[in-house]
Length: 393
Image 1 (cartoon, rainbow, N blue to C red):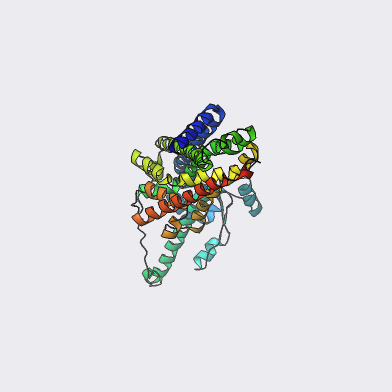
Image 2 (spheres, helix red, strand yellow; image 1 turned 90 degrees about the horizontal axis):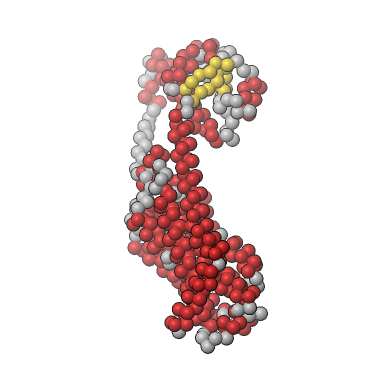
């Protein structure tokens, strides 16, 4: 039986390697596309962050002569002031047309109300839908709030009131994150690309060894061989596992090589991209491979043509990545119950490896056993499925 399993395995591997387009899509395009996309995105973020950091902040101020002290305070905080005389409609139009990032309007009664100890009105025109301006708007708002607090403190001092009476609590924020743990903010999609590459690496072989053979008419002669049908499908699944492992390894190597050339330090991050981490990423994904291969084989077995199988499996490939979408939406944290969910447990383990955090033995065992158990069940289902005579017709 072991010899039959090995013969089927070698047959499927050789036939899949003969199809150059399939090999290119599964072992070249898939493993390289994810690292290329993520690496380019991160490089763009780093370049843009450095460019925006050096870019000067400017604000157009209508009626700047009415508040010389405020204007001087804004300038002292490194914000360039452009005097202007815009009406309300003109200021709004300049923001809509993106001729200006922000326009600050100082009302004519500003000085009078400020001298009377009343709130002095300011109008800040911004476009909150323009996310490129948010950091500049936040910086100006912080400057205006600082100036407002300073005036409030001066008023209380003039009236003989200690300003500290209005600050009963002082909060000191201490960031305990490290550059390595912060790198997960940028590399959070790494596990998504890993799982996607894992499935795409074995999809074409799973289709060709089931629906493809049925369509070519070679499945019936294969099932008539004096070998248990279950062992035939086990050999096909084993070949699919081999290509999945190869695709996963190539993707991991491409990711870690590409990300080495991304200057994450400029964003205050430091990715853990050594060989040991790369091997750990492959290791934690290994238990998911049998379940993924068996799932693709079962779905492809119910289809009648190569195109139908390709359409179904393209959709099925997205199912294991759905739990990853809930991680950020629901802000999920690792737990024993969540580690038992295949693909989600692998995601948490990859995150822990990238953050250089220790993984508890219970969490690791839960993830491995749940994935292997699911894989064993699906492989048994596939074996029973291939004992049915209706499989041929």
